[in-house]
Length: 222
Image (cartoon, rainbow, N blue to C red):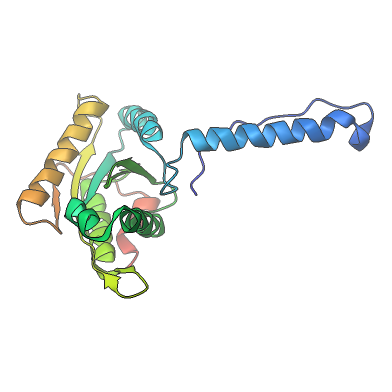
């Protein structure tokens, strides 16, 4: 399960040291609070970040992009023919599929990336400090991983495919988070209309600096 960053809590000093009767209770309450905070930001089914965390993180990363001049990329990923898949195999297999794809996403993205369940069978992945080219490399890697990793069931393996839309926000862009999502979603729709199981993306703009994390993304999996 992914964890949202939690504030640091400090316990008050106890004059009785470790034997203080309040120590255990305060520790328990702190753990419960941290658990609740994580649950607020986590999708219960997949273990990825939820829609609420997505919207908060996207606003934050776009503001960081405006201040730093470094781009932030957004991937919108949707499982192909998922309704038909659900109707054929049932909702429990559908849920297993979503958990399966979530694990593939977690195992493919970088540690600084923010993978979220956007809703239904759609996932959103925020890529901080990432150019369009590097984002497309990751998107194609994800598409390939999903296609090459069928869902294992007792009696058979079920093939899966996904479509992905990719766009990037730079300090020169003036749209808000909602507009950014609409742009990436439009590329996802194009991937669907062009036959599914593919990546569609925005047009490459001016070249940007390639940082260390982005360089690692480009080199991984080759």
